[in-house]
Length: 160
Image (spheres, rainbow, N blue to C red):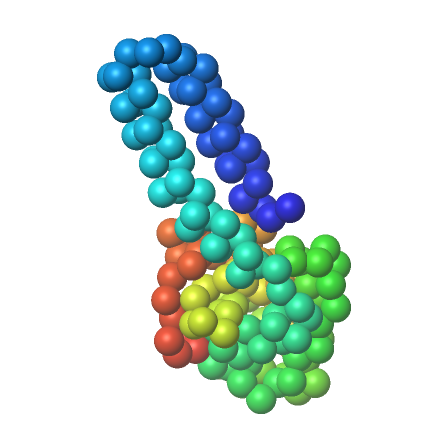
């Protein structure tokens, strides 16, 4: 299941309640049901697309770190899954660019192959060699990226 599953479950429940309330021969009720179904599809289709992008390999996470932050270019991250598709522990072969004096707690977004923000990472050490990365809603819950920034187009790595 993706992190969006509870939202989709609530949407499905609401659709079922709307359908149960609209059972009957009245044409206006059928039209309301059709409008409710169209609204559900409008929300469901993008949610499934975002959720499918979150099913990620460790290699994808390793690539998404420097794609999200310029200071991580050339650091050669190696990541292991803590919770597949949600949380990854990453170690850098080389320290990040020295733009920050103490990296501990520093956060950067991660960017997928389609150049969209798919999560973010937090440095666990002052030297910036160890990071914990979260994808999707987990990155929002960890306060690494905002809900509105998740999924945003990011054609170049961030600076600063």
